[in-house]
Image (cartoon, rainbow over all chains, first blue to last red; front, side, top):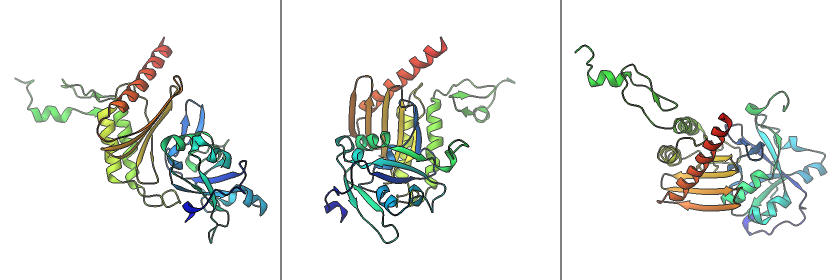
Length: 139
Length: 160
């Protein structure tokens, strides 16, 4: 199981990790403190959080579009391995977990308390908005 | 007396609307339920329509206990001037109510009306708390009251 595996130190701290955000209301919220949109922390609660390794995608000549290829309505966020491993994020482990239909699949493993999830939600990058929140400028 | 109506007739003329007012020509009662309660309920109930795997990562359908609990707690704890929360499903079947305004982060992850995980961060005092509530809602009520107070002060400053 991925929980028994160590952190993959071959994944450098500057490596981007991609995750889809569903097109349902309020998965992306407007943070009035930061004065910008960000994903809700609810997106970061799984003990084994599935993401795609952006560096591996790039090595194969691919990019973030791979992650949402079959999910045109979804949004997409990128979080760096360094943020995920930080104490504020609960010192998560990053584990390569290639699966049959996704060789770039990676897991962010570890208990994610509400504070850790909130920290990750405030320190990731919004790449693509979900469909219902896109405007002419963002699409 | 002509003006006299049977209680049932009067009741039928009452209509509670968001904002806590009652619309009816003979209305003598005013419902004081804050608008934020109505709006939170309105945002929470559609979560029941989500099905398993709603996030494409095997998320669970929001649980009845979580939806019911969120509505119950909003009705019991939300006060006038509290900003409207963002309401979203959590992949584990819980429901989250979340605020990020007035230099505060407040999150209530509701599993049921008897179990809520709370995250609270006050950027002004650099206070950060994380706790689970099962019966005593005092700490959560205090945080909601503080948020409502800041919201009220901001509104009054803008009005001046």
